Amino acid sequence: MRAFFRGVLNALILIIVGLASFLLSMRLAIHGREVSVPKFVNMSVPEAERLAQKVGVQISEEDKFYSAQVAAGKILSQSPVPGTSVRRGFRVQIAVSLGPQMHAIPDVVGQSQRAAELNTRRRGLELGTVALLAVNESAPETVLGQSPAANAEGVATPRMNLLVSQAPEATSFIMPELVGSKLSDATAACDAVGLKIAGVNGISAASGDAVVMAQSPTAGERVTTATPVKLTVAKNAPAIVVQTPIPAAR
Image (cartoon, rainbow, N blue to C red; front, side, top):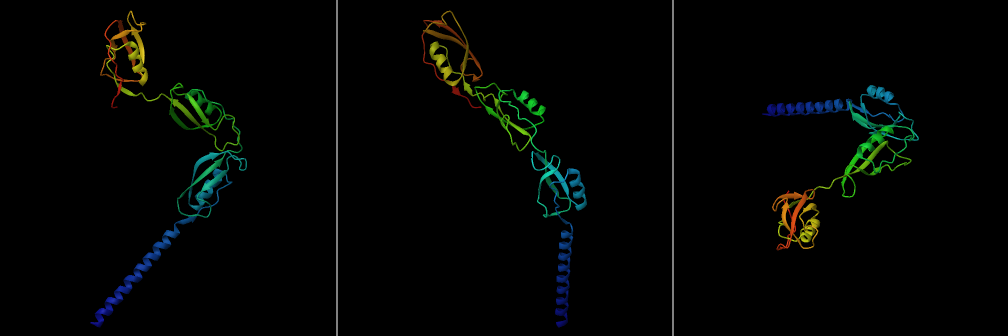
């Protein structure tokens, strides 16, 4: 029996030693695949690529910035920082200097979006974010704002961001019954929700007591604030109270 237990104990010792050797080998293998990130800052991109290949990492140009301190074409910053341990093949992100700011920032506010984009590129600048804002006061696709501002100095990047107007989303309504109402009441009901009366037909259209005899679109139709409303009126017809258009489910 003692011989049996001794054999089992020896087997367990061998297993433990084997596992320890395996874990040690794995750790050495993992650390053997790690490298230290070198310093790429102030190098040219070709120089950095040669060093990266030698060390066993890769570089990826992510952005460009103006800099009065670092010459154009040299690496301005990197991530991760030098000395960081990474696995072989790791991609180090770099930003490249454009040198001192040389491009004048144009004033594109008030221009169409297309004209502003062309102006931006002609000045050697890049087009950045184009944000849209729904407004009633400006024509659609008109530049409302820009960043950087016109003629700005000390700009960090060669990128122009634009704020561009777009037409507001049309609100949907159920067209009310206007037939039988006074023209003044029908007009007020339409104005209250932004519906535009495109035309009024009838001999007595200018009369203060004109009454709506026909309408287009007809009552119950789905309309938006962009839908033109046309009315036909007559005089001395019985009037009713007109109801405000009801918002429709979209």
